[in-house]
Length: 203
Length: 277
Image (tube, rainbow over all chains, first blue to last red; front, side, top):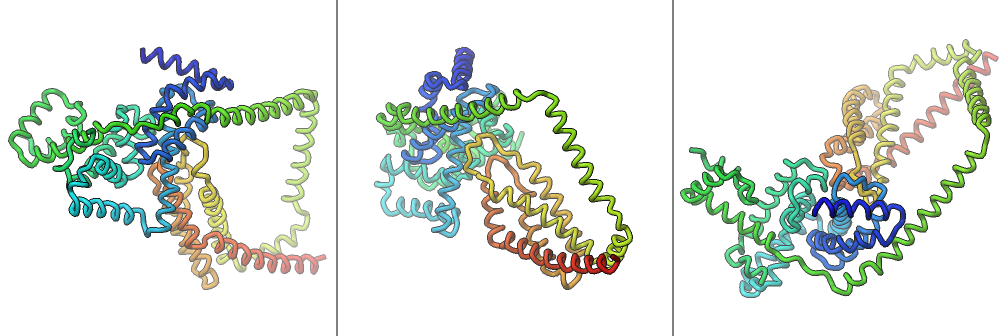
């Protein structure tokens, strides 16, 4: 089934390379939601996720000639998505830097704010939406590479091997980045772990 | 019996269900007896589950429904620009294919002839005596000049490398990773050369030149130590380093000073030539 799907992808890609937009529209249809999810997880922002998911397919179409079929088409799209997200993130953090001394200070400030909110109003803090927001904020303590690996593995369910292909990192590096990310998140979220539970998060 | 450290190493594989059954059983036995490890393991598991079980935020329905309609005009633009490029390509191909083969051979032969004349005039100047006099004058300032020339070459090479990086469009459409190995290798080489060069630039008149080499060394060291071609944030660091130290301004000032001193030397040479004539 998987193999047949890959073959279909390759046929569609070959047709799209020759300028067949109908073929490309099928590839878009198959992958647009996955690209959106990933962009959202990376940016925590609906507008950015929408812009990025459109941009990814434009970039992909322009660079179709570079897709040699060594990996899955979706992996290749994921790679473009990650690059686009990181590029946007870099732009945004340089803007933040001009306002706040340093990105680390900025993140530190946000996390302190989270802790204060919890101590002042634990009931509000326990509200589902508020918690989600703070989990998203916690993800910001990760470095771009840690976040990329963690998001792909744990929020988009990609195997370590595929992540290694997408990010062009060794399997060992991917694993160690993922575990380092997990430890950081554990540390950041530990202060309200008693309040949180999986059921509450997902309602 | 293994200690806690051994079991902590198993945590990651166990959390992703990749631990062998035998090791998993052993880990479970340990977790039952060791409170510290058990708490750490459960805390990691809870954290992981928070993210793994989180539902995706669904996109806006209207956005998804109009996804292709919004995308299509952009892709058509790409198709149009591609076809313009293809037309140009085929026009050039036709132009070159229409010429007979002997015209290219003739053009190649002429080019080689012109190059030969140029090289001959450049290297085999008849006024050897004058050249010898100039060489003799040059030798007088040799010790200073050799290091000066080395420093200039060093600055030129560094400038080319930095210009390439500073002007690199990190937001470009290129989706493939950029290989910076060559830049890294050249930077490492330049950093090594800098140490020797700084020792050679000992004359008081070369103080500024020495400072410039030191400034370049710091920037090049950043490039020499880059870790990943995937994360390009180091390029921003290089850019801000170049900006802060006013590297390009200093290089330009240095060039202007060199040009002035070279024109002095040229005047001196032409005076000698005139005397000989």
